[in-house]
Image (tube, rainbow, N blue to C red; front, side, top):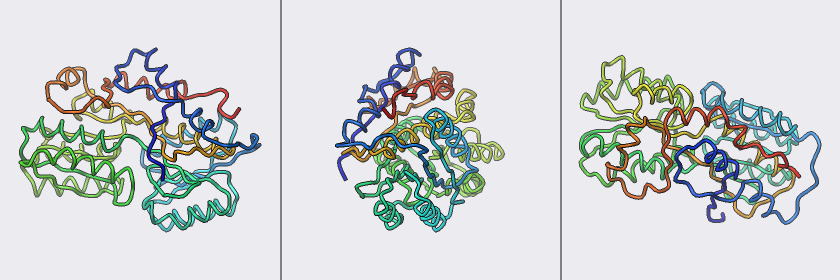
Amino acid sequence: MKRTMVFFLTAIFLFSVLSGCSSNSQSSPNTEQAVEESADTADSEKDNVVLGVVLIDMTNQFFVDMIEGGDRAAEDYGCEVIWKSADGNFDSQISLIESFIEQGVDCILVDPLDSEGLRPVIEKASEAGIPTITMAGQVDIDTNYSTVYNDQENTRIIAEMTAKLVGEEGKTALLYGNKGNLVSDLRQAGYYEGMDKYPNITVIEQPTNWDAPTGMKVTQDLLAANPDLKAIHCVSGPVTLAVYQAVKTAGREDILITSYDGNADELAAVADGQFYSTILTGAKKTGYWNVQIALQLANGARPEDHIFNMDTHLVMTQENIDGFSELGIENTESISLITPDEAMERVENYQKELYVSDLLD
């Protein structure tokens, strides 16, 4: 696998300038240009491009919003997207990918429960001439590409921020998705990277399988067993909302809660002080962006670098943003700080931010 190269759409940064949002990110090459310039040759534009997408499930609000964004891209670019749910079952992911191979779709996208476990079926797709995208996953095969966020570094900063806010001692909890999912693994690794600097903090971790009811039950058990718990970080926004309900029911709203995803309900929770912060990825934007990349692969582009990163933002109230630098966290140049209102503006304008009129020219 080639070393990771970060690709951002130029439109992202143009929108940032026009909206006046605070950002420390440096502009990188346009994703469209990065894909097209790296291809030796590209087939002429196909008619009726069909993309097959296998999601972990289609009930989690992040995935519901992602589908909406992906369908918007399909409408903008005139392709068809077929969405399938694995319902949290790894064997179902394999079967659904095999079905897409048999249908002869033009590109397959999957949010893997276990990236390496999918290697044989990804190889099968490659042999059939079908490029693949492991969203939040990585498989070292020439025709497979990965779409990810700056997960580990973002979560490292969240962990250090949490450590400072709880006085650099005591118990914190990390609720992750599941082992083998690249997003979950990177966010988990980042949390420990940050917390390792604070030996007087004990981290208690539990899986949630990206499921809100599971997250609520895990939190109830954590609170019962650890009445001195000071903070909870959850790697999935919809799950964090369930976590907060468990915390509120237990009368433990003193617990510092941080999240990751940035859906509308999370942004409201940050604005209301229920969450200290979240990371804005933007589910609708993620769906739109992945369809854009898949379309280019379906039309013959084969970039040298196999990993694409989408920009993210740390969302906090203006008061917390103003106090962020005083926490003394090192190496925060990569993080963009924005308010919930600024984040919501980005959530609502993802199509304007990403749309490229000549994407397939």
